[in-house]
Every structure is written in C-alpha cells, then in structure tokens.
Image 1 (cartoon, rainbow, N blue to C red):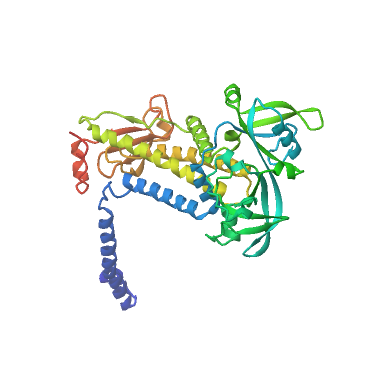
Image 2: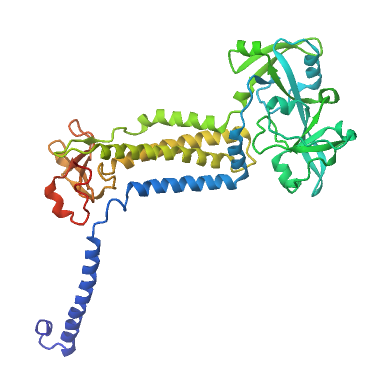
Amino acid sequence: MRRVCTVQGALPWKGEREVAAFCLGAFQDAFFLRREVGLKKVPLATTKGSAAQCMFFLVTVMAMSYCIALVCPGVRAELQALRYRVPHNLVMIQSAEYSRDSIPTISAEQVRMWKGRRQQIFDGFAFYQIVQTPVPTLHGRTPLRIARASSNLFELLALPVQLAPSGDDAQSGMPRLILSNAAWKKEFGEDPFVSGRVVQGGLCKAIVGGDTPAGYWRLPGTIDGWLLEPDVDTASDGMGFVVAHLTPSAAQERWSERWRMSAPTPDGTRDDFLCVSLAEKTRESYGIFLFAVILAFLSLPATTSLPLGEYRLSSRKLSWSTRLRRWTFLCGKVALLLPIVYLVSLDAAYMRSSLGALSSEYIQLVSAFSICLFGLRWALRDQRQRCPVCLGKLTHPARVGQPSRNFLAWNGTELICIGGHGLLHVPEIPTSWFSTQRWMYLDPSWEILFPDSGLVSTGYF
C-alpha cells in the first residue's frame, strides 16, 4: 500500500495515511460482516408475522374499543340498553300530518276522549308531556326537562324502576318524580338517599321515587325526570306523546309495523293518525349492526376477489389438522372482526351525547358498514399472503419474468415462506392461463437452505 500510494515527488505522510485508512477499514468491514450474519438468522414463522401475533393484535383492538365504550357515558348507556326488551303490542300514536316523531302532536283532550270511548283496538293509553321546570338540586334550583306522564307509563314500557315506598299517608297521594340516571349523577351527586325526598317541582310537590337505568328510555325526547301523575291528561292542556297497548285481537290482525287509522277528534270531525310499532321505532343498535354486516357481506364480492388462490397438492399430503388450522384461522379473524366493528361503530356514534338519536343511527350504520367491508377485505388479503402450512407471513418479494413476455412466460412477484414450506407466485397481469396466485410446495431438497427453521416437515405425514 505504501509503494502504490507513494508517488514521485509526493509528501511522505500521504502513503502512511492511506495505509492507516486501509487498516481501519478492516474494523468497518468486521462491523458490517457481523450485522450481515445477524440478518441471515432466519426468524421462525411461529413468532414473526405469525397467526398468533395477528390474533393478539385483533384481541388488543377489541379490548381497547371496549374500554373506550366503558369510559364514554353515551356508549356505556347504549351497551346497558341491550338488556332492555321493548314489550310487544305497543305502538306510538301521532298525527299523520307530521313526519317527524320528535314533535308532540296529540293533545291531552284527544287522549281523554279515547279513554272515555269503548275501544276495540287499544286497551291502554299512556300520555306524557315534556316541560321545563326548576327542581331543587345540589346546585340550587336547576331547570330540568320533566316529562309529566301518566302513572301507568313505566308499567306499559316495562321499565325496571323500583319505586321507593311513600313515608306516610300525606305522601302517598303525591306525584312521584323518577330521575334519569344522568340527572341523578349530575344534579344529585349520586346520593343513595335521594329516594323518598319531597321536592318542589314547579307548582306542585312530588316525592322522588327512584331513577331509571341508563339507556333504557328509547322514546322521543331528552328527559331528566318523569313526574308520574294519575290524571295528567286531565290537568294538561298542551300537546304530548301517546303510547298505546294493542288488544290481542288487534295485534293478530296487524299486517305491518306502521299503519294509519281514522279516529274522531274532540271538535266532532275525523282525522288520520299514524300508529308506529314501538319495537320498530326504538331500533336497537344491535339490529343496525346486523343490517350493516349483511350489507358488507353482500358488497364484498363486488369489491374484491374471493378465491384464496390455487393450492396444488404436493408429493406429501398435508395432514387434516394442518388444513383445519388454516381455515380455523380465517374464521377466527372474521369472528374477532365482528365485535370490533360493533364496538368501534358504537364509539363513533354515541361518543358525543349532543347528537340526536337519528344522527347516531346513521353514523353507526355508515361506520359499521365501512369498517366491516374493509375488514373483510383485509382478512382475505392477509390469508392470501400466508403460508398454508405454518400460517406465517410470506416475505422476501422478488420480481420474476419480463412484462414483454407476459403471454409466453409467467411474469409477476414471487414470495417465499421463511419456514421453507413453499413459494407463492402472484401474476402481474391476470391472464387466461394464470389468473390467480399459485402456491408451490418445496420438496425435501430445499431443507439445506432452511437449517435453522426446522419447519420444513411440519404438517406432513
């Protein structure tokens, strides 16, 4: 090196510098060689990109979405509402002139007239009217949205409310104030002894009779409490909402969940009213989720290819347990995907309590459909990119062939299983003779290239 680098007339230290750089380069070469040897160690397919790693990821996402649902009050209330089942043969009656069910359209006088007439369709009515009235709370007299309702409202809806017993005869005739779960926590500080307390609600006194579970109220109106009065339709003059119970004969003759009826009005004329089944009106989030999942499964064939590729038989037949494990893995991904879709769509729809019920339903429908569709596409694409023997992720993609000879020889991408089980050929352009990816099993002669994996013979007999 000194002789080569030292030329006639050059400084003597220049050759020494080149020699020193050459010697120091040996350390640099050793460092790169050590790193290259470390990269050549083949990681096992059971740990890197494995099926267990994929399933753990899905379980983690499901757990995180469930924790978010428990933290957000609106989502938690919706989950708790799944335990409530709307009774059969209940309908809500509204004027046929109004399309929005959030507007009160039935007068108290109309309800009094229906109760006074002999009915063949209904055998029970409940009326409620939403007013804003100040109620003494921990923060002073706070205006709350109170529903002045018939005393049989909760009985018709079968809401699980345990009414507190009245103290004496003077309190037994008082109206009962049932608080919502949110109002009990916010305005009364979750006081466990609030039941039985007498409060001044507006112009009348009432005894606090308990609270309703979160998420169980599914009828129109955001309500902080219910003032149960036996003669509310007599004392009220404004418009409100009506819940009616069908007779057994009328329930059998009902052909749809939404139908019209003509009934007399207090002024002597007849008017049209719309009767909507309460079960149809109070659509549960689970029903919306099922509808979105069905739509996603129907849309899947139009958005992606369903076949998983060609898996030709090798000289050594795969065991039935290996083949069963592959299909079990695919079904497991789909099974974990469905609760993730449900929880994430609930988080997106009910995280903001300011949204209305209709807006939340649309958000849940759109989000559940989108997440389910793209999740199913991911599940199929992930399955295509895995070894059918060890279920490890295929790696080391390499381009094979030339695009100019696409119709004479195959042209595309080749991936290999790091366990040494086979190669996957993915065509660049689908043709009539090579339209889908193909899996090729490797014979025992390839074992010398995979000495550290020990997985070549796994899954065969």
